[in-house]
Image (cartoon, rainbow, N blue to C red; front, side, top):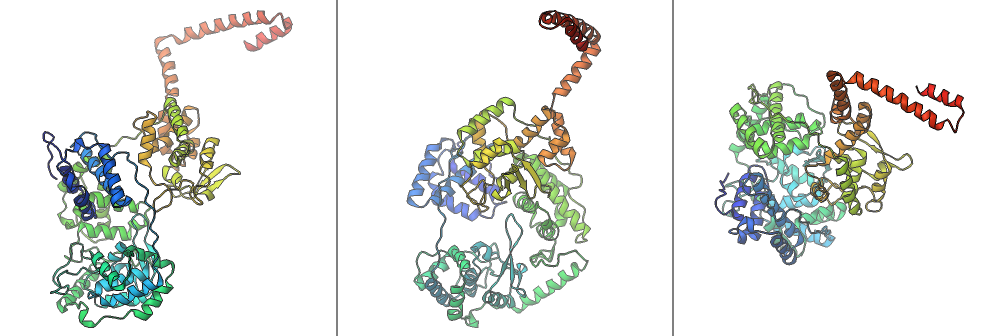
Length: 638
């Protein structure tokens, strides 16, 4: 990591270098980030980072939105904000972020639908491309209607051509099954007969003299197809059609199939990249070694062609940590609901071990990783990363894939404190006043439902109208964090917030602009609301804890609190018994009086005063009731 000294001027360029030294180990979009900075921020590299103001960022955003596009302006603002946040986290600059809280410009969705004539012209022009790999890549994009990146990263392990299936990997969800058209199956089968790598569309060299046989790209798969696509459109005489616009072909595949039947022809065999005999022999030998290595029985699901079939790296033949992790996720992690989070933690914190052989990771390396993550990413993130690292080694040893000691053994995890923050009555009043001022905001209604239901934020964000029963005033959550359904009573305050969302979306109560269709994690807006209400150090989870804490303070039992919050294990509810201090205060007062000898005297004095007051009361009311009734009342009260 580049060292930045606080005694010298910290320029924007040095902040970018610091961020890239962090991002190169964790992000796959480094080339795009560098390109964005080089195009739009390179002229500000020598400017002092502390002198950049919010007005400067707003001016830059407006200029980019006017001259280029709103999407580009949003990308540049996000890059500036991320650079400053990373510098603040590393302690390089004080808490100064000129892009913090700056709203993003609205970007209308692109809906360019290729016309049948345009599709026919593009398919007819495919024959003019010299590269068979690029040509067939464009053909698969049209025949599947998938994203360009998904097709570029297609591997043979994801395909089951006998059944015509392609399991498309998703970032935060289980793989999605895509049924391939017969034309796509024919193209992929032809490529599989002459495969030279695990990628379906392997990288080719840009030099014309070697015809794509001299070198491979860093990723191993095809890259940089934009120029070829532009040249193809020029030959086809089609304007304004982007490569990702081919995704709209999936809504009507009939014109695509007609165009391929009429115009698509295989290229001459001289243009095809034939594998060399020594490469074929080496791969056959490697496959035989792999089959012997995994001869031990391993439980696999019946239908899972996307599973990683070997824990060994295909290039070196050694068991690297990256290959072991992929094998672990394919055969064990895929069954867990936290699989997307595990993959994200691996990409963010454990990818530094990806290419290292499993027998070369030592406890000293793990200890160094633990200390680094604990300082820069947080103690909880460090513990989670070490738990995943340990689980991969434990499972690999159990499956007899390796016979190595677990490098995490002996490395202690950080001790974490359970968070006990909840809102006081005064803070609740200030938050309610701020939410009333934002009554028309979707996030404000979302926060109100969080307050008065005690549900998890992810369940509230994914609330559907079909889950709301207005007759019984209940909300049924189909599946919670513990895998069970949960029915939540809706109080008038929560119902008012929900009814205020009527008409905004037909499915989601709290709609959003993301891929899911609903709001995902409005962390920034929630922080702005809390800051406007004068509440410090509060999270969305604290609103759930607030409801349980006030239930405990008002005398609700632990089973009732657990039922309200959807807890299965009562140990999760015990924290709310610790938060209610009134029973503790009463017990301490009783014990203190007993210790000091004041308890009996106070009790005797209290009885004397009570009798005198009762006699006085009986005398005062004697005028209005009979003496017999007054005497009976006195005897009853005493």
